[in-house]
Image (cartoon, rainbow, N blue to C red):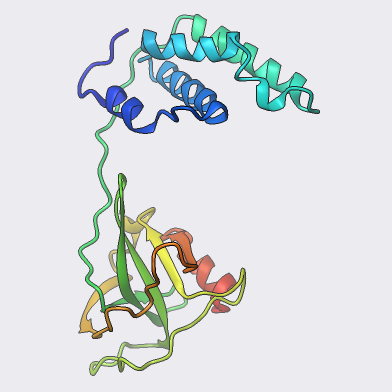
Length: 227
């Protein structure tokens, strides 16, 4: 069955096929083929590549001689049977919506905890990739029942992670953000940050924790010791 609509598979294959990487190539083709089959949109070219990596042994090679070889062979045989069987009816594929972020460097963001108090995040940078733009922030060392009308000073301390080697930066992906409309607000306050503040040269260690709005309070509790 041909893929209808935008030429997403062609672009995906062109951008993400791990050319020359023997181990990742077989994972790529199998994952893409099984995903397409589940959506009722398996392309013949993708099916052929997936069956090839099973038939020529490359899909089993990383497990060959190991304790999990037998289990992996069973998984591959099941995948082969599925790909050779009639696929389900074609499913509608929702258009990808890129994550957006209009916060600017130095912006202060108020977040109301479930407990009722507020904490304040300071925007550092945007992380941009093919999924969109995500805020990278730090947590100011302040908590209170109301955010001061006069704001918080630029020199206020910043909380550090208490686990996993420290650090201050965290990136937030927008999972469950829609449920935070009355708890998350961009304040009319901005700190002026030095151009190099919280930035390091590419390749240098600059740990950034990744979380989501759904898991944000868990991060505050486990990594910052807040409850």
